[in-house]
Length: 151
Image (cartoon, rainbow, N blue to C red; front, side):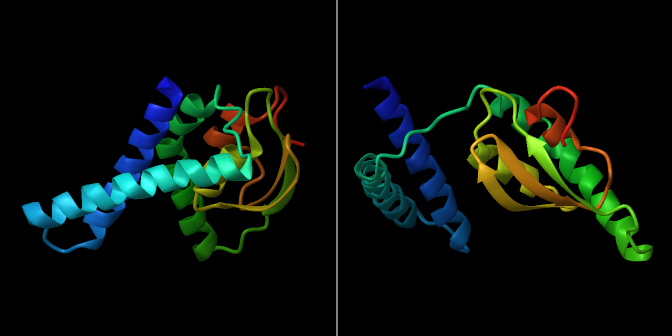
């Protein structure tokens, strides 16, 4: 019951924020409508996830990876800007083998959030294919990759 409540509160929060950001100025009536519509959307999203049989897994390492995301974004932006100025001779495609406790869906999303990386495939639940403008791994990749880096 606690997990269901947390899931609905998170969905409701995300949907409310997306709605409020989409409106230029927010009046109390618009905020109320956004909150009620988001609550209905949160219940619908949970029911759809349950009907599809999807389970959230591998979130043990998500917090560490998410905390390294701001540094990864800044570093990736610097690499992207320098690559625009000079052709990236070091660009590479590599397989990132994920640590136990890291799910390919959220790990791939966090890795792809960096401006200098692009997830081009998820061949298995524990492997993500990444195209990167730099030869070394970034902070998010280091947080979710198996010891010894990515291969």
